[in-house]
Length: 304
Image (tube, rainbow, N blue to C red; front, side):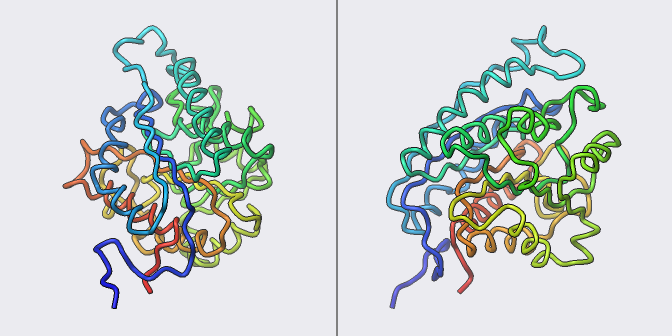
């Protein structure tokens, strides 16, 4: 009889044969320092061991992309979209790494860093596949501000809008899940664009299983055609304290895992991004360990 490791369980769904881990220690899109250490914290939480426990044949860790520090670029800290030229330059580099991974048959796992990195991930997926991916965006925030609507000018609140402007996403195949802190300008844009958004109130009423079933109807059923972008502040801070923009009342531990288990079970997920892990604000690396658990659930790890 096989003995399961501390990561291992019987799996009903076959994980990808190749995984590409890409770290992006970006903190230019946010006000709080420390999120640049997120990729290292997640790796330290035994990400590779977990991936190996799933039987993944090839694991390529590309290390971390180079990201300038804010102190060396104070002149670019403009009010309406702070550090945007630098962020876009890093995201362009990221897009090429993601594109190469997909073209080689890989499953990109992008580790942030703040959520502005999604601009690059989505651009790379769009080029590699020739079509915008279905997008499941799990976050406490809408991240659909523009420089004109953003109260802070922080670019980590704008990636959905920028990706839409760059034609990296199809708004009809985009779903926002877990919203509970939405700016007035974002609320208006969500309504005007018609993007499907599930607030925590709606998740409370419908239940996470129903929400994810609706979401997958929207993003599509083609194998490996959906990108999941998971901001750790989408989870309640009692479970994930290590994030810079924590908001009470988020997803529970089991709701977060159920979401990942369902996309794995459906066979639709083709790429994954986990952002906004800030070990400076964490408790004994709890949030990074949870990030690893969620990655493994998205790749097919099940309880039985």
